[in-house]
Image (tube, rainbow, N blue to C red; front, side, top):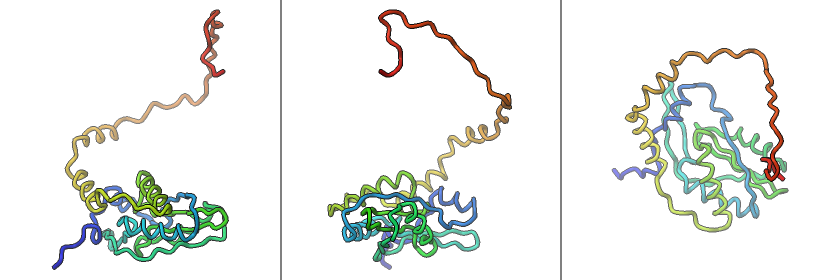
Length: 213
């Protein structure tokens, strides 16, 4: 059989995703959002399709059965850019969070605000973190200008494999964290507030204070 493209297919769950599984609970609306200015709807629509096609993590699908999580990325498909009646990015992001469903392969949603020419990007936390936003927003801005995206470096599949390998073998700091977590509780607070007033002598002639002028 033909080899599986590492950019498209099964993925190793990263440690933070496994942590979410351990915590349990619903993944519904577990999302983050950002807004960025755009030139027009057509440019934004083209840009979101280019960026999602370039980033396999934005095409991630979760399969959860009997407590077992399996991840895979799916082939690129057309991305819908929803036009919103509001000019409030927060309201648009709130509505878009309801469209996210990792088990249906919907980990990112895009909304266009006609009034302010703003693109609102809402992404599920299973597919993006705070650092990844920097890359995603840069690529969206580049694509909206009509420029080519920079070539990919490390694929998401390679990154996930590397994290999983490191977390399984890098235990040098384990003793430190076990000791830290077993430390005694901090000292109790005094229960009240205290004020201390210190009178400083005036600055000598020729000296300048530390305040802004």
